[in-house]
Length: 106
Image (cartoon, rainbow, N blue to C red; front, side, top):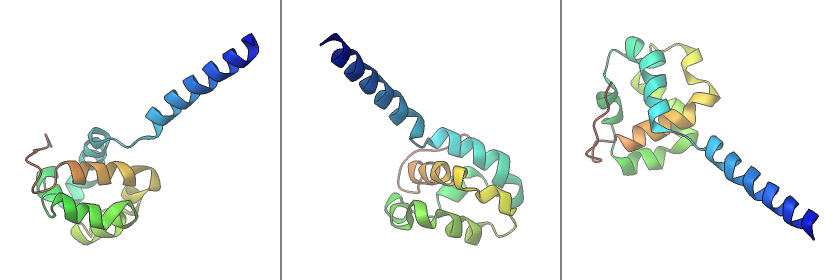
């Protein structure tokens, strides 16, 4: 009985920790934007995210974010659109969309 309880507790703890590390983050997206895209794009984070409303960003989705960012910022280097950055860029753009009322610090 003790072994089953220990296994269940360990599995619950593992799932709880794993789910928090996998989630995307708008703050990371802001940091990546500032580091990778701000100079080549020549626009602020507010201007980038303000290109679309939150509903429009949601329609673009995580799968279409790379293509949309390349349209907005064609001078960006290819390395700025690595897979590991895309979900964070999406959360940044969605969080600070033109109708969100939020203003990024970059």
